[in-house]
Image (cartoon, rainbow, N blue to C red; front, side, top):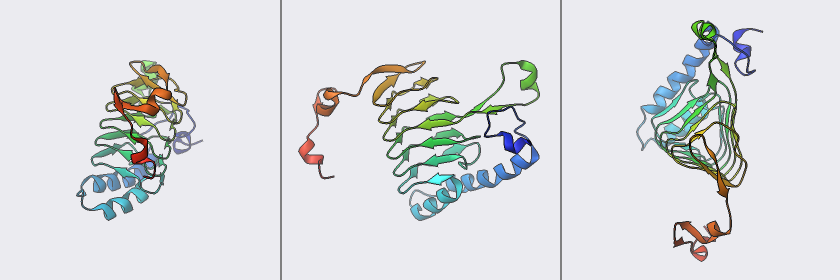
Length: 206
């Protein structure tokens, strides 16, 4: 098995392999072009995203600047995913984000890890583990999601959280390390922020 074949297996490999770097540069150049676009160049941004991303659902919008190790090639975004400024995807292997999920500014999603053993790090070796984020999630500003984590559907991750373990569906989770605070419940059907009530009639047809 060559180095390129190892990047999605979780095995140790050498990321500076010539074949890997050659492909990586193609997508990093596209990412650079994306980050140089104007906000008004929406059509150009849409076309670039479809070239860059592994999967780009309808209505995906990523604020520039966007950073990605592999230029977004290993990012798979469902429909109507929104990412605020400075999303960083260490996408050395696959990152999956479900439909309707929103990411706040300065979110980091990392798939790459390095061995604890110093001798192996000195050789420049790394390994990659996929990250899965479900549908209809809200990842708060400054959150960090580490390699191998799975986040379920309908989850809220609090701002500044460090997500080191899997998070089940339908919960609010926060902290360092991130942990489940509570389930999404009946109170959330009545209030959208503290004591501010939701007017369901106003929004039922939108």
